[in-house]
Length: 432
Image 1 (cartoon, one colour):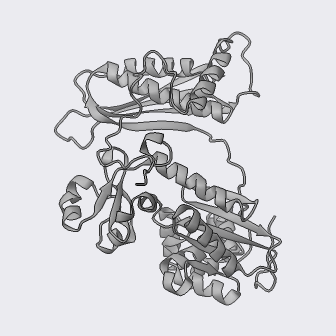
Image 2: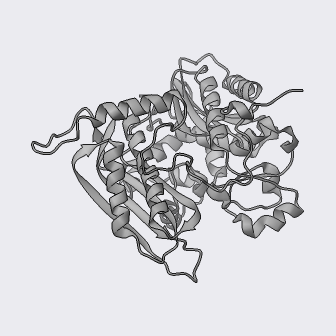
Image 3: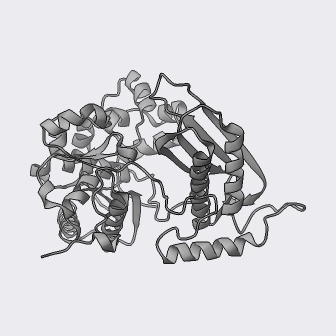
């Protein structure tokens, strides 16, 4: 486990948090220079609401989560470039950034699509500001994505350092290092408690009653009181903010305890056949994800709901849970169960807008309790393996079930979608 003296006299390990600035908007700007220094807003699935924006858009007070149909005139008046989410592009650019980061440390935790932790072991003689600047410069040069870098003796403090680097780019040049007790205390007094990594809304309210306004106030609480009133998780966060590493780097991706695929339809559907096709597709996606992490599920939950925004129409929200007699990762088994659930849930006359499939009760595929009398069809496993191999090789869902639309994927509304510059040969940039 990492170790560091409380007063920061000697460093054994340091943590680096690299966070991409306005990641979705930055990805769009890499391939469309006309968007540079202009307000850019990225929309959620089905072009619903704003989920990411550039600093220029923030400066004119375009709110996060703004429904675009209500803010369309505002965006036009302020020349905001509004784009649909281009997830293939963002995923590919994220992979490139993470690959570059792996050059700077073998110990890396990809925390989200646009940020990662690095653990620096044996870097006692390094200048961490220079090292952070080198990381930032290489990512910018090789991908065009701007980043901010925070360096500190713990993961929680590196998050704080990163926020300082982002908030004060001129003073920090995008890199900030907490390497002394004085810097730590100053940083903790600066950051509001609600902005601390790991402090949720409920925890913030409970700590506010205790008089905690910032992160430093939280560290002044006694360990005994925190353990008595909260859990070991909050105690670890407190120690991290004090400069004592308690949250280890997660270098490997842990298998998920449940897998969900939920989507809004591009239109409302009142016919069962369209809904069954969508649910079958969602179930197939869950099954594929199961096999990727070598898991099988004991049960599935199928969700179905009408458009809650249309108050003048009859509403219907329901779910069904199907428990299997044996764990399965078969697309055939899971999809069939999901479609049968739709048959039992569907209500005529309702205009449905959203559906979802959740697989749960996960166990390792190669290590689970067998049923003496019931088991998976032995033909399914080699069939699923062959389907996965072909779909992976051709980078698309070439093989689908008979009840799926062969020409249809998620079918999201994406009227403002930019080209898939890096993942579709037809969209590659052409230099004249």
